[in-house]
Image 1 (cartoon, rainbow, N blue to C red):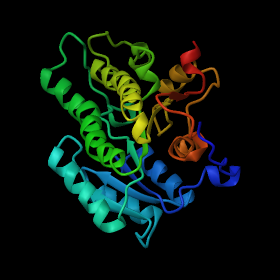
Image 2 (cartoon, rainbow, N blue to C red):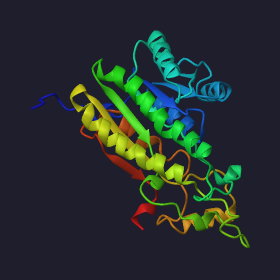
Image 3 (tube, one colour):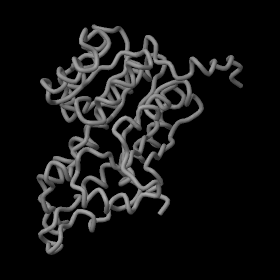
Image 4 (tube, one colour):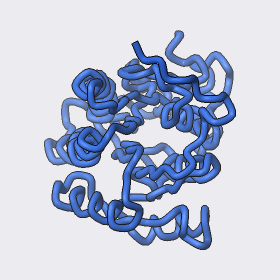
Length: 278
């Protein structure tokens, strides 16, 4: 039986002296995750395929770039993952938390295109899985493998409420549009997010003895200037009656990344305003 003393509550949510790598770190939620890491006392490595956006995000969060800095990373490339690990170790001497946040996610505000299941191209399917599943597999293999061999650590896989339920395609349609003309959330998105939840459980049991905890965070829809009609349709599906603010996942991310969740692994934390209750 583990007889270690309990961590005081005011220290349980601390990331002081911890290094956290966030894939897709220049995106909407990636930047919020990085800001939360800094606020909790940690160092945020903002890893993104778009290095210019990653630099901009790092400067926005920490103008000195001492506790938030950019790193070029294509998560689907094993050698780039290995180089990113080497960079972290040379710069910080450690890696404590991996946040698998990178994903291909068609957004309403960016102009979603029709993507019927019957006609979705194999190229689009494979591209989505390359980022969301292959990328998480490779990053977990490289960074998680290092943590497993060096005393443990934490992996947080950012899934989605759409990894638990199917998307309601009706909310994407415009008046007068046929189903064939309307934008759709592609099946690849749901497959990726559902796969991350099972990958979480697999790795949690696989690395339990090595001290690597692995949990999934399932956010709901985040308001980012989407058209009013879409927002209304979606909020009608959410018991709390609104979409999330982009900063409302910060506390959940820190909880899963710190000693506050020390007896939690293989779990899925759903923060979706209650949408999956219906």
